[in-house]
Every structure is written in structure tokens, then in C-alpha cells.
Image (cartoon, rainbow, N blue to C red; front, side, top):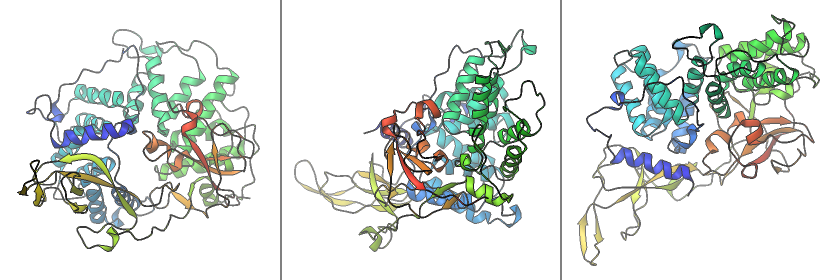
Length: 521
């Protein structure tokens, strides 16, 4: 069993039985250490290791809700009732992102029957599950006075806790506060450049694009802990800063795209510019990406190098059409596998399970009289029952059965129930997922090629990294935004060197997804 599976059991057990150190203290009021800007070190944790595994059916509801909030749909035309309903369905299955999105919908007034207090309670539920982003959100609520009394000191304490748990948004925010100029030196000065850089790199390793903007400044000019620049920019430091900005654009950083548009097109300081030379053509393309990210912050461009590689690579021809450039840089996916019917897909509710999904026991057992949360549950093994898994909604009463006790005597009454989560019924196919419109569907290439990290790329095209479905880092590796356009003979990205992830090369396999992006000439 992977360590993330152990973690998920701990989280779910806390939901069922564990109490806070003082069960009269609400999570929003828990005692936390004050924010310490002078911390001597920062240990990088990864958020995906801390959260419960996501139910596949809940993920589909969540992505369907996200698609209905597409920026192309005018806010007044969006079906917020359906968005709320889909998000709530996913949240009831403990989909942690859906839980926080639902809290946001409550705060925005998208569900008149729920308000700020309901949002705070939902975030508290996520906190009890140990979700780092929930601590970040509670910090924001204290900063803004949303459902709680405004308290910036408590806000920073929650943000510090979130960052220590692995939340990249909190790391980005706090590292920016630790990255102040030498003009602020003196009593109470917050500059802590070594810790700021570690936070930035940790957030960036998780694919959080906005942090790349500040990280590029740290790389461009060496600094001492007080924030003072300790040496001149060199060709090496400028190249590293340029690379981070470029990767930030691929990860969806609008400020990175804006900066590169300026750097290549009209730099403020020719003597210290990051770009090796003025290149109006590159600037124009970064401008297209900049404007798109300003319109749609959810956009990602993992195959950016096909249409806009960094120097010294030559720019491929482009016909000047905005959509052509954007679609070429998008992530891709093959058509989803068509699942065969299963025994559960032929049954009636509550035993019915769509053919798209299979069930996997989580190891969580419950002796409660009712379902502690919405999920598929079945009698645990060893009780002599063959009852199939069925869907129970939160608070729904578990039925009683006739079973044999330890003495071999028959009794009628409650039994222990085992929770199952849905997984995708696709036999482990490499199928990255995203909300509608963020991916471009392509034909599955033939033959299907797979390579190890240490190999040279055998065929030019889009390559997708993948780890085992139960790997603790699958949630930040098996993603479309990790794709890369590679030319034949090029080395594959390596997790430690290129992603700053503590992940051995031999645990990642690269899969060929597409050989021919749209012609942009």
C-alpha cells in the first residue's frame, strides 16, 4: 500500500471518529503558531500527498461544473443552479476541490439557501480531512472577514500552516512577503530569501504557474538573505530566469507571458534584459498567450515549445491567427476508452454503477448506523454476506442482516460496512482529463510508444508522463499540463532536474500522444 493510501485512511477515519484536541474548539478557532518570517528553513511537502484520493465519478461531476463556468459563457448566461448541483454532488463524495469550490459558490451568493457560515463550515469539514488548501482558504476568510471576524494575524497563521502542509497558493503568497527589497531593512524586516526561494520552488514543482514570475527574479540576480543583490546577472542566471518564465507561461502564468512579451519586444533595460536579443516575432506570440490567460486563467499550454520555443531554437512559421497558435500549444488527449458493460451497470439503483466506473475498496470501515458520507458501501468481508456494493447518501440508514456471530449462532442486526470509491473503468489507459475546452482531442497514435525517462525521444510529438494509478504523486504527474512537445532525439524531462520533484526517474513512463499538432504556418 502506498503512503498516500495510508494517509487517506487517516483522513477518513478523522471524519468518522476522531476529534479535535479539544472537541469544543471549531477548526476555525484552533490554536496555531504565529507566522514566523524568520524561520531558518522550509521543508517542501506536496499537497497531493495530503488529500484523500478523488472519486472518479465525482471528478467527472466536478469537471462538468467547471466547464459550465467557461469564460466564453457570459456570467449572466451561466446555469449556476446546475453548477451548484454538480459541485455539491462531487463535494458529497469528499472531492476536496469541489468542497472548496462549493464554499466559493456559497460566498458568491450562487445558492441563496447557503451563505458565508455554510461556506466556513464546509471549509472546516475539509480542514478535518487534513486538506492543505482548506487552511489556505480559512486564512483568506480571516483576511477578508468572510464568515469570521477579520484577523490578519490569524490569517497569516493559517497561511503558514497551509504552506507547511504543501499548499502551493499559500507558498506563493508567503514567499512574496519574504521577498522584499533592501530598502525595508531594519526592525521587523521580513526578508528571508533562502526560505522564499524554497517555497517558490516547492510551489512550482507542483505545477503552480503564478509563482514562476517571482521565482524568475530570484534566479536572475543572486541575493543574500536580506534581499540585497549579491552579484551581477550572468548569461547563466538570465537563461535560468528566462526558462522559468517560459515554463510559467505553459503552466498558465499571465504575468510571465506579459513579461516575456516585453522582454523580447521592448525591454525596459537593454543592459539587463533576460532575452538574448530583441525578437518581435516571439514577443507577438507571447502577447497572444498573455491576452488569452488574462481572459481565461484556466488555460494551460504544455506544448508551448512546438509553437514558441526559447532561443536558440528557430521559430516555426505562423499564419498570424490567434486560435491556431492557442490550439497548437494546448494539451491533447486521445478519445476516451469505451467501457464494456459490467454486472453493476446492468443493475437498478441503488446497486447501479455506470459502465464508465469500477469500484475499489478504500479500506475504510464503518460501524455507524448511517452512512457518514455519500459513497458506495458494502458489507465488509468476513461476515458471510454477499451483498453487492450500493450507493448510500450521507445520513442514509444502513440495513440490518442475518449473520453468524463468532460462536456460529445466527443473529439479525447491524454489520460493518466497507467504503468503495469509483475508479475509471478503462484498464489503466493513459487518458489525461480536464474540463471541456482545455484539451484538444487527437487520434491515438499507432503504434503506441512508451519510453523511460533516460531514453532519447524516438519520435517527434506530444509526450505524456504517467505513473501508476496508486502512486502518491499521480495527481500532479498524470496531468495534461505535464505534457511536453519533444523533437526526435531530445532527452525526456526528468522529475528531479526539470520539475523539482522528489520522484525517481524509473517511476515515470512517457507515452506518445500525438505526432502532428495543427499546421500553424
